[in-house]
Length: 461
Image (tube, rainbow, N blue to C red; front, side):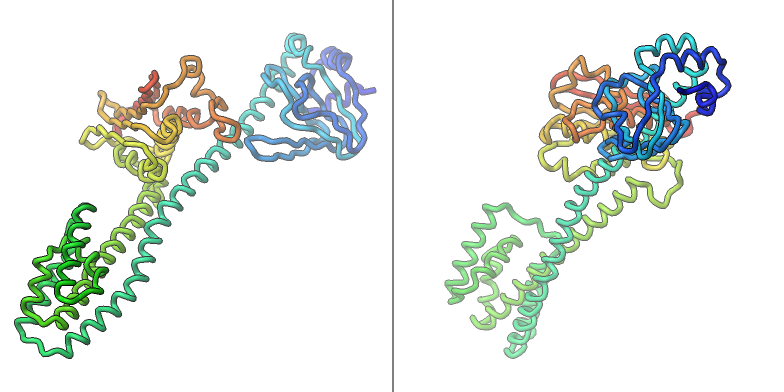
């Protein structure tokens, strides 16, 4: 039988009056546990609090999608606690060694609160610690999930230009061989200075970097015309060359001018070299575009995370929004049209690192999901007195009236199991408040708008 001295060794019960301890013991059931005994089952009704007196016990369960194992020693209190809204036990408890515990029924919590107010206060503090730890795990899991989605998208975004650049450099080797062979062929021919000058002038004209490619129909027409022209001069095997020239918007009369000043063999060698040079110019442009895209993405990542910068700094809200859109481009380009309405003046706010980017990411990501990846995303910024207002809207189905009051509550989510933790908008609200701002949402079918007010940099606190 448990006596009061054993209970006093539990920190939650230390220094409590004898009559309170006696009442607690009289209402509790002593449990003698053998190694391997299960005293708590995950999913069972949360109907009791347990005080560990002897032995080594272990809890095991899943929190935020992560398997958690924790040890319980003499003096620990586990199970449901007063004022907890837990309906079912979220973990299982098993005795690792022989031991003893007290089982106090949750049905007596109202009386416990009246009879043992000091114990109640201590148990509430213990519950608060549990909530903080659970929230910390959920938030960490939410961050990891968000990071995973962003990483997957960025990997795809980086892979496309990297593959294009690699493919272009591989093609360059073959084309440079063509240029060398064509140049050797031209070198064996007796060309006048005027002929050499005309070939060089045409080559320079055809390889200009700022050529705007024509539309597909025009390219097809040009290709047919150039191919017909070449065939008329006995060049029946240069249809690939015709296609390359057409893509650079080269007109048939420009090709004809070569045959006007050169014999057929020399004109052929000149055209092969010119066409190869045109391909080189196109591939160099592709490599330049691809590497620029990679550079832009790397810059966006650095800007998004504020790497190598002070933890608190002035952030241009518009630049921050654009950086986030760049990071989320892999989701946007599947069918989301972005409408921007920015107030074209610097709108700077004091930000803690990349936290504001987390706000934009969560809201925009939710909007994309609400529209099922296809729709209109509207982003507006303007100044309102000493604040900058960021409005992010979408034309999705809207947030149901019964859901709207709960969207900022921790762990509330309308997504399916495994699709959301319910901490996205809770995190948004905490970050906005941390920045001395406020957030509100207005929603109806076809028009959902989140408005975030943030004090402009330099605003007195």
